[in-house]
Amino acid sequence: MKTVLKSLMVGLLMVIAVGCGGGSDSSTNASTVRLNMGIDSSEDAVTYLYVKKFSELLEEKSGGDITSMIHVNGSMGSDREMVESLQAGSLDIAVMTTAPQVNFMPKLAVFDLPAVFANVEVARKALDNPEFNGKVEKIYADAGITLLGIADQGFRTMSSNVKVQSMADMKGIKIRTMENPYHLNYWKSVGANPTPMAFSELYIGLQQGMVDAQENPYETIVSNKLYEQQKYVIKTNHLLHSLTLVMSSIKFDTLSDENKAIFREAAAEAKTYARKMTDERVSDRVKIMEDYGVEILDLDQSVLDEMAKSASGVYDDIRKAVGDDLVNSLLDAVNN
Image (cartoon, rainbow, N blue to C red; front, top):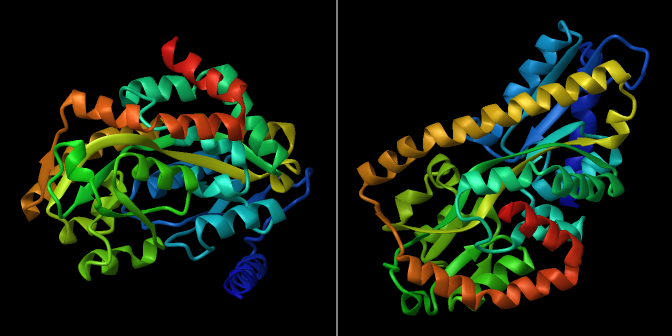
């Protein structure tokens, strides 16, 4: 019922937009293009800065012929619902992380390989690798979605009311995770007790002690004030929080060749901008948390190595699910 209501809402918004002269124009010969863009986060997040910059660049490069309406805070649906809308052509553009998309495109589980990147520079170089990126583009294309770019919000880190400095400290911690089997298995492998929970319920879940901990990038921890309910942030850096800029192939295929080139060019520039914003905002986010009294904890490399070793079974599961070719392509991109 929820999904049906969200779909009706999307349709109503688009009808209203058309009535105001802002509807999606699917004609390849039309000089104007109107877009609806959705994100499941607030305006105080790199996700929004990414899509906003993309929108501005499209308008600038097209001389005002391509304009957009950005819908924030999940008003166009959850990430899962937005994927469905992209496939149906009722939503034009979205920015979201890869984890919820695994339900639709199982091979995207390659992004769930834990501790695969030594640092963010290695991660970005690997994701920009033409061979690996081409394989990922095909995964999206086969699902009726056009991948325009991959930025990030830095690494996902653990926040907790339990001080964690060793693997032993992980034992039994109730940690909220996304509803992704590889994320669940990762936290089980390091001794924690993972609990899937809707993100909208997380703040209250932490407040009421339903969970002790959660894991997200600094951006999300701060923009959603999760740090208010946590004593520690532990730099596990177990996964890159990738942000994919994706478009309905139904819409993209209606564009003229000239406009397709504009979209690609704008997407490349917006990706660079989003990555820059992520890097610039890290120290500010850390200061906000520390000023509130949250303690930021580093883990010894020996502990990180032990966690990675414990998660070897997750690698095996992902290899089985996505195939050696895709996993090896990412590992080759990391090492070259």
